[in-house]
Image (cartoon, rainbow, N blue to C red; front, side, top):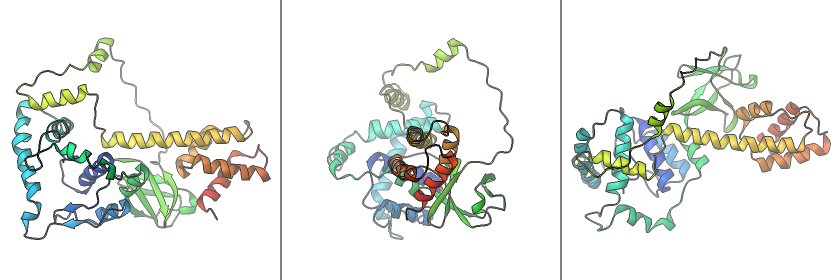
Amino acid sequence: MCLHGRFSFKGDLPALELVFRRSVQKFGKPVKVYYDNGAVYRSHHMKHIVGCLGVHGILFTRVRRPMGHGKIEAFNRLITSAFLAEIAPAKLTTLDQLNEAWLAWADGEYNVTNHGETGEPPRSRWRRGLAKIAFADEDKLRTAFLWTEKRTPDKSGIFSLFGTEYQVGPELAKKVVDVKYDPESLGQVEVWLGDRLVERSRPFVVNRHRRPLPPPKSKAAAAAEKAEPAPKKATANWLGYLVARRRAQNFVEPTPQALAEDALKRRMELDASVVDVLAARLDPGVVDAPTIRAFLDRMGPWDPSRVTELLDLFLRDHPRDSHIQVVLDALHAHLKDPS
């Protein structure tokens, strides 16, 4: 069964990891991973990912033994004859259109067609063993695929990553830290000191510059963009037909950007729960929601149930109208060091 796939301009490590990550999200953790001998497969980061997910050590094709991946070569020939041959009449012009057509073909054609060797569709065969599938925790999966770079912030806490400057607190100035990041989402990075997450950092901006808003679209133009043509019968544009049928089923494959935005949305919901806990237990006069959210953006996420427990202990010895920064610092100290 084809779990996932993407066409990319470069066959580098980030491209491979995007496909592997989405495969695990959709179909669960594999017991083993079998790779070719290319350098991109033998990278240290790929070994790190497999180790974090608890997958058996990577297996590689034996050198000068191409028979080991004969099934993969047969699948590649099928892609050439059944998919790539249909690209020209489909009139695809962008990489996104090509990837959408690929997933429509893989999920709507290949995975549901009887396999010549097994005699049943690959997806049906996979579903028979669904009870044995172990799915990865989304947060652990996200952490496993983070990339790491070492940086030393200057005396003002500024460090640079791929030409973008970030700022951390003064306690990390002049110290060597590990910066963990998602290559597809550099809007926020994690700063670790040793094996401890210290804070999260966003790109450092001195002055805000707002771009002018685009002119409003006419009602007719907006309606034309929202309207989607109904799926047509199969024509010479076979890939176009598969894409339209997939869209008619209201199935849209999330992009890496969309996955990053979903993770951010879950994070914001968690932070909102912590704000609610603080608002319910502290004096309303000291509850400053923007300050709390800004603090959580750097130091979170926090478990709301754990925050509730620690806040109740804090309020035994401190008044309900303690300054919000005092409360946040106290909670952070206990969450950072439970002892």
